[in-house]
Length: 398
Ligand SMILES: *Cc1c(COP(=O)(O)O)cnc(C)c1O
Image (cartoon, rainbow, N blue to C red):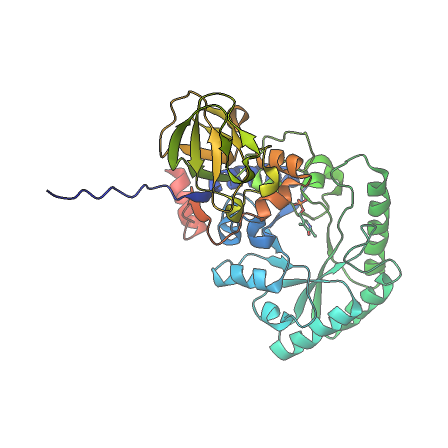
């Protein structure tokens, strides 16, 4: 008798699904919003695109109207360059010893916070034989990166001198807000006042830089702070930058798995390690092969729902390294059924924002943490880039 080998199920055990159509939708909202005040859009794709995949997100963002990309490190910028992305890229936080020369040679703009860093960039530019394009960061009140008020005039004058000598090109003056998610906060006005003063110091030194300040929240709530360019991150991924406010953004990431086995269990059974949960009736339990090694936090034991078979259902018992159990009651659930841990949230399904609330963190951390060796990644709706704008126009005309 021939042995029949079961077809492999096409769905991985646990996977992150990224919908690039959602990314394009979100970026087009942001870019339109920025364009209304004459500003360009730099899509922020640091930390592997907040866990969504930097290269895919960057390409989708550029297709949808972003004109530039923002990342943290030169290495992140080089990943984009090595993928053939030639749009302007700004890398804004450098650790001592990082290879700024490689960034300069690849045409990456550098965020610069101090005279020391400026000197390092100028020396690297001299070796490369090409000026460093720098964005001078002023600390206007976040009290994190950037030149403090007392350090700003020194940085500006060093930059003006280096610019005269051709080692650097001062592209922009920029800063970052401390309370952007609270659009009426008085600290914002204080930061804007310092920002405008800092810009004037640069102008007085003979520089004519661009200005950028707004993250996602300020992009959507404070058009008066768009300046020449906005730097949205979280909104690109479809997550609301202002808690509780809906901007018609589409969450781009879904964490999903599938039912691997089912069992019918009587009342009174302890379930999973430590028996922290017992069945209180006869019920069907589904085994789902995704656990804390796949990004499902063990600390959410007893507090987690999944979307399975058209409704929310509780994860019961301890979250384990490789698996969880889901209580399905008497419903007809089948092996291979899709299990959504979080996603776009249609019909009240769980979202990354809900996880963040339960975890006492922000959705930024939830999605950025979904980069794990065992998690499969599936990217939906990649769009072929037109080989040239002319072809694009011809296609649109047809
Ligand atoms: C991460 C980051 C952003 C994007 O912030 P969101 O709140 O995600 O929009 C913008 N600017 C800087 C300097 C950042 O570090």
